[in-house]
Image (cartoon, rainbow, N blue to C red):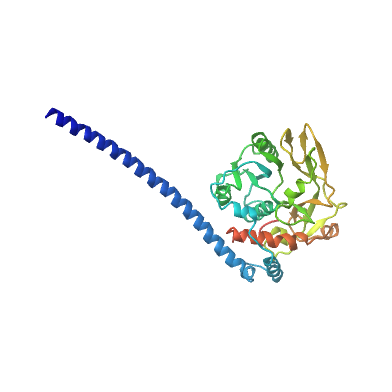
Length: 358
């Protein structure tokens, strides 16, 4: 009798052990399926966003439904429609689990977006700039958010880019002196990622590198690949883009189309693109131990600085500004339609405004 009791006791223990294992496996399976369903939902959500955006892209009158859109805007989109294909960077981010690796070119941006800004920079213009940088060949953006108040944080508004491994978001409210924070931001990224990055640049959201002879995706990365091995810094000349521009247009690079010449540049504050290894950086120059600096004269690479109406205290265009600038439509005609389509294809249907920006 005792022996039979022991057998039943052992059988019960074995049953409980198997039951426990079964429950654990069941719970883990449920959690695994939950994660996969969540991922599938996100992929399907992105697919639907893309389908809606592509449907918009295929309608020639897409811009006519936007406030203040002009006939020229619609025409520029029609011209770009023939050659449009989804950017390579956008194809890559469809894999949500793609880990960040080593980069050929990154951008480090410190930014604060706030209501009292006289230049009226908003998240809309920031997204336009982000898509331009990605088209230029920037593989990753490290964004130091220099917000003063918590409600100014850009984390939620940039969630799609953060989750897609396009942006590393860094809250950077201190120090409050902008220049100190900016230099600290730049050099902290160098210290942490210098072994994983070939080239780094630190330009602001009102600055756009431009190469007149190459506007295809990755143009800036291709340019850097032409540099000799001993070049550790490329100095980009600063060209101001001035004036109110055409306020019926809803993208900064499409609206403002007057540029200073080499002789009429307001300042010589060039911006560097640099190899972060053995380098520290200020806002407009680097300190490097080995190598050479290559100074661009502006005939190939320009840094277009969209000041807009800054020199006229944000008022109407002045005769002085008009006399110091010449009409410049290359970015408006060649790149603006591409960036518009990129934004729409990524689901950024509200990243356009003709009432904000400089």
